[in-house]
Amino acid sequence: MPEKIRISSNSVITILILLYFIIRTHGVAGYLPSVWAIPLLLIFAFSILVLPKLPNKSLSQLVKESRWIILSLIVLIVCMFLQYGNFKLYSTFNYLVFSIPFYIIGYYWGIFGRDKYFKISVIGYFIFISLFLFSKLLQVDNFGTIGKETIGRLFYTPGGEANYNEIIFFWPYVAFVLITAISLLSSKYLIPKNRTFLYVLSSICLISILFSGVAAPIVLIVTAMLVYYFNKSKSKGRIRLLLAIPGILLFSYLIIYLLGSGLVGNFGTATSKAEGFLLFFESGYIFDDFILNEITSGRWTAGMYSVNQFLAAPLTGHGAFLEDIKGAMTNIDNFNTAAGGHSFVLDSLAFYGIWGISLIMILIKFSADAIKYYKIADPDEKKMALIFASAIISLFISNIMNSTFLFSSFDQFVFLCCGFLLGKYHIAKNSEKLNLA
Image (cartoon, rainbow, N blue to C red):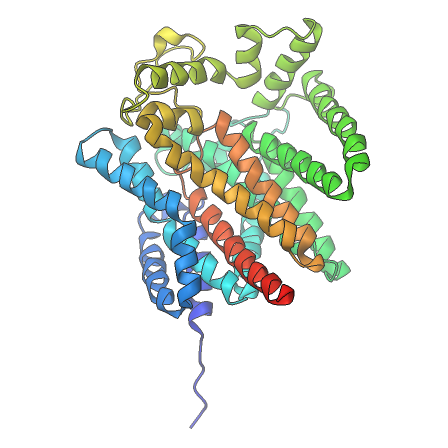
């Protein structure tokens, strides 16, 4: 009899995760409505099955480290029971619940050193998204106009331009996947042929991001670069850090000047934000509402509205009610919502009062875990860990001015990465304790 082919459960999980990410990709999901639910439910089931395989100590560590996630679930459940919100509340709950299985699986892979499955999931999706974006770039007729008319319209799923707002969450996702893949492929053992392939795929992602006309992914990438070089210089000592700060500021000014002056063309909202910074420099470094709204694309007013809403009801919040804002976002009189809707951090406080801190702490905890792992990572993984940490910290910073967290399939990818980092950290920490003993 021919020998039976055995497929490990980790391989099945990896295939399911890759399949889910691909089906949920903006521009694909619309053609396969609800099909993504099949791999998602199977991933959910596998996450439950792997829990008993964790050592008791690792399982208790996972529960302890998930305290902010658990508290956030309780807050959201209470709000749903009290009907203290609309679609925003229920979508936040759903995305959090269905991100937990990815967190568990990532942690499981990290604890047991199943790095290859994590790398296959991330790099596999990175290759798909790069080739997918390349197919869209080939369809562009005119690269002279930046924004949704250039490349965004090519992602309209059946339903037309009404779905355009969904793509706002897609581009930061692409940026995060790009940074995460680079962290895994930055190994010194990467052969030249694969390194060239990495450069080509990365270029495709970067060009697509630039021509999206959306500033959020550019801000995420630039912030991650600044965080990376800041932490790298800090680890080398105070002198390197003092030399790095002027370099970081100079690099930031160069990016702002190139975008704001129009020397490199018009890149949609990224250009308008840069123009706002140039106005700030020209005004003698004096901020006013106009300049702040120019820099933030109206988010300054939206953010202040959320702050005022929180101060009006800090203990209970106003409930997770979010409706359309009519007219210009820079006019506070146009708001009839519970929050400004453009800052995950400030909106959470306006929606849930002080209880919204639990949701914010999830991102802060992810950032802290990434930094802790970087500090004790093996020399061979030091660079990878720092790039990872920079991406996650950048994600937290970007959610101060955007509301991409717990509102798209982006979350499952983030939770998978953060669960994996947490597992890696605990293994490294336990090894460190053994060595000291």
